[in-house]
Amino acid sequence: MNQHIPLNISPKELKKLLDDDSSQKPFIVDVREDDEITIASFSFSVLHLPLSKAENWSGKIEELLPKNAPIVVVCHAGVRSLNFGIWLLEQGIRKNVWNLAGGIDAWSSDVDQSVPRY
Image (cartoon, rainbow, N blue to C red):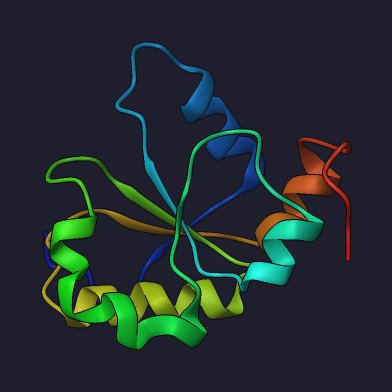
């Protein structure tokens, strides 16, 4: 795969993948800051890599990510996650990298209204 930018995935498409027992589950990376996670979090497991703390994790990014699962990157509205996804691909990550279009805000609107909006 020679991907240059992350592909967009809608909240509903992501929900379908997470619920489908026959599909390979994507690995979710949340790049929001700690205070954002406190306000609104997903009900499933994510790897939290706040962008403001990149110096703590950027050098070991390949160790932090699974070997074979597709990666979905999320943030509040989808902009930071898109940029992070581009960075991942620039690092030579050879995986499917998707950006959650609209971020957790869209997730809250389209999939799980119990997640607070901010």
